[in-house]
Image 1 (cartoon, rainbow, N blue to C red):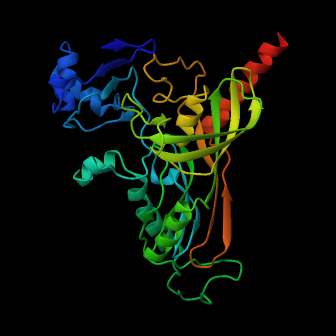
Image 2: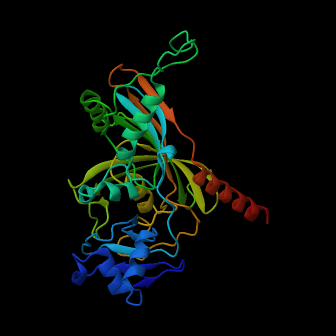
Image 3: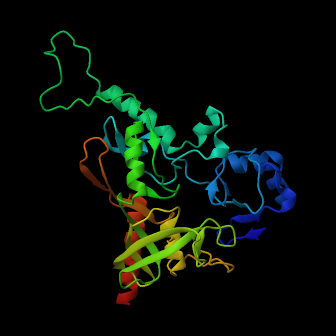
Amino acid sequence: MTARPDGSQVFHVSTALVGQTLVGALRHWIPEHSWSQIRRLVQSRRVQINGNLCLDEGRRLTEKEVVKVLANSQAPPPREDDVRIRYVDNHVVVVEKPSGITTLRHSEEQHWPTRRRQLQPTLDELLPRILAKRAASDAPRPKRRGDRGGARKDERVERVRPPGLRPVHRLDRETSGLMVFARSVDAERHLVHQFRKHTIHRAYLAIVQGDIAEPLTIKTQLVRDRGDGRRGSTKLPDVGQHAVTHVRPLERFGAFTLIECRLETGRTHQIRIHMSEHGHFVCGDKVYCQPLFQKPLVDRSGAPRLALHAAELGFVHPHTGEQIDFQQDLPPDLAQFLDKLRRDYREKTVS
């Protein structure tokens, strides 16, 4: 067990505890807590596995997983009202994903009953309900006595088919920003082709550790396991996936930099890995803040969460062939964090 300065406790799953339930392992690690106290820790949103909140008391643990007991409860998951629809038709839907929600249900969670899923919903589970409500509210109202019928000339009644969603990419739980879902097999095929050809336009905003003065391009081969169970880059020939990230500094604060990252390829955790390996890990990143076989680097930024946001998304519409583009500013939590860094930097330079 490792006690952190923030009051949290970190436990590593040993061989002896493989296959044990989460509450069983916690009872082993914290014997002074009763079974009911252990269950309350999980129910009160204070337990993470590998950096992700876990509410499943019966979750079976695997070797080398990291269980963290937080000093305070995590915020509740986003609600339907927190997901904003930017564009929808019968072929695609573009949404603003809030931080704190997983894009898709993990394979080991597919068997969860409905009640357990509702405690920790995923974006692909929320969206059908959101779209169904939107379709119902946009549907023409029955004509009443005195009505002249139909919508007013300045109203646009949107008629879309019942929702069907096919995810074609994903964002990490803590990453916010723009996403597109396909709503038909044909649209899915067209969008997947664009992603594979790397013609989808995507740009991210990130706040990273350190001072980046000049634009740079990072090219590496990414592998699932760099040697310690984490994803990373390899120098072995003909191994891994080619990954390219173009980085441009936007604003510098001495010890931190606001950057724009444009993806030439879209690999899992690409920006987080590239920035970390370049010596500038993303503020709030609790996974890629640790160089290979070294101690984790200290994050003194005070970031409220992973400071990464999908700010731009553009693609060719799979039905019309039209190029459509979307932008989203930093959400309030990261905007406030950025303002704090600006104030702190001004105070230091003035003094």
